[in-house]
Image (tube, rainbow, N blue to C red):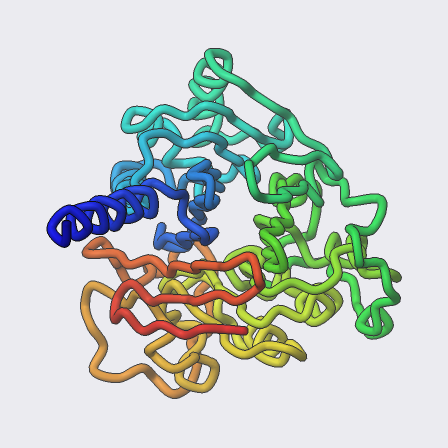
Length: 373
């Protein structure tokens, strides 16, 4: 009798273990990948449904970046991408799309609509993109639309040069950071006049999982941030802000970065893209910020504006003996030397969030993990 009882208990324990193994994960997992100053982020809902935002760089870097994205896809155990959001049609956001599409099925393509900035490097990609999205579901989204992801509330807050017209639930209070806002007439990074480029068309997303909230606006611009959050903040507060425009000073105004009060900011910067002192001053002084994590060391930060190394996922192929104390100025013009290369092993920053609002951030390079509550 005792042997039968032990057998029954053993079978019950085995059944419970099998059920637990087959139960969907309880976390929303986010991979912010290193595509060398471009953008690619993979969101995996507890249901197993996936959203990829952007596909990295084109040209000679397309294969490299598609391979890096696929490394995250494999880590997440995915067999397909359910939704692909292309924020806008610049080469550092859509460049790897065709290479990625060779590697994994993509079930839905989401974008802002027609290209407003034709370019020789982009036009052939968009021609093939039209062929791809004609074979599956394709949506042109506008502010206020939703992306249907089981277990998440995924809302489009910017697209096609427009912003959300009404506040998200719980948002809409007066924004105290609007009074000191000064509009840009010239892009402080490029020195070019601001205008109607693809950056202004960016598809921006606000994602809610239980009490956890994320904001990413692509390369949404400084002036548009005012339109979105002033005089009333239509976004409210978030837990994670993936910095706009790779953490550059042509975005990330106090009117946005301070108003949304993130606990954590991640910059998808490059070795010489993002991390300028003006941008870092704004991001690092956001009122509720606990930590800023960087995809890359940046020459433009120097030691003065660089976070501790445990929060930085990637460096250069040729390691520096020490990071210079002073930030380097951004070289301008056709004769500017190329940025430091990083074509070796690339590491992501991974966020795992629970429905109660708690989340952990992990540096793929050194396995440093921190939990935020």
